[in-house]
Image 1 (cartoon, rainbow, N blue to C red):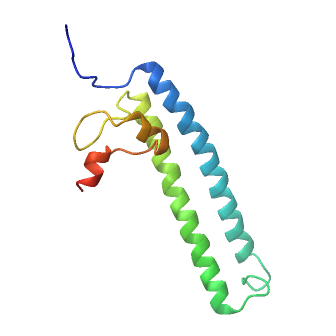
Image 2 (cartoon, rainbow, N blue to C red):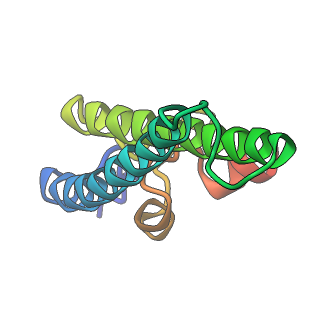
Length: 122
């Protein structure tokens, strides 16, 4: 009786994760486009300010939107990197322990590169 530990996810499992990632990637790109549109609208108003807001509020609104856009850009990049890992058949392997990351974790955070154990020990 051989009980070797699984070292990578099967092609069928990788296909399942690809679908999850592609759906999240599409939503993330839509959200990024929304933020970029908001920024363009804010800077393309007549005087470069958000209409009806004073200078302090304008600056804060711009900073918040920039921060949201940057965060969304990072998420898009992480999801695209996860697709590359699927293509290379190394998706779901913890970069610290070298063991498989739990499927449940990957379904929730599909771009993760750390198992829960490795994340908690950081």
